[in-house]
Image 1 (tube, helix red, strand yellow):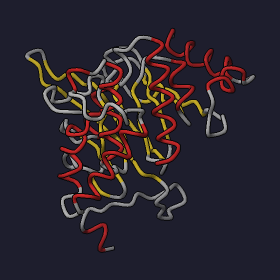
Image 2 (spheres, helix red, strand yellow):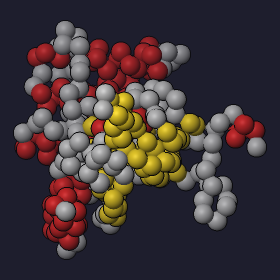
Image 3 (cartoon, helix red, strand yellow):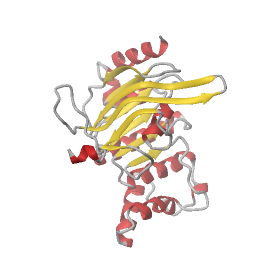
Length: 274
């Protein structure tokens, strides 16, 4: 197959047939850091498949390599061994097909919220018209509740509002995969809840494949279709996977009142405590 020759790899399923239902196919992924005392293996032969339009969360103890995994998918961290295939393309570096939302939004403080989002939009949609780019920026800033604050400088915005800009910026680039590295970890519980609602509302409309790192069990249950539990490092890998069988779109009240909610919560906590 010509596609295979070009390393546009489509992996085989167990029955030997080709299938493209997976947006991400991570196979035997290994990350090794050399040290004076020998190699330190962060991730060891990690396997994970993520479907198109699926939202997964990844939890595990600090130091188990969650963020390492995310930066490798983003193409920001070299792979020691194994492969990551995104939309049938082998990942070899960063690209606009993968958007990242970090714990800190890393905005340019002297620029407005509008200009911070426009920076990326100009690059990704360089061949679009000025009006097209303007419409994209304003649309996503409105979606995250910043319609009236888009012309304020980033340094004038609260931490929660800055993260809203970060969410708008990521979605505005129209990535195929959205990567979230504890995006609400530095926020107070009230703001965190508000931004979870903002994130899931925009995601429900865009339906971008999403992978979120979090330490918060409740957050992972509320947002995800599946929760991936990683074993403790070193040599971390996928230890367990929990299917979250709640209908979408989800309302927080309905999730908290669902008879399976505490069953899911207990399962995740038991894994983390052992």
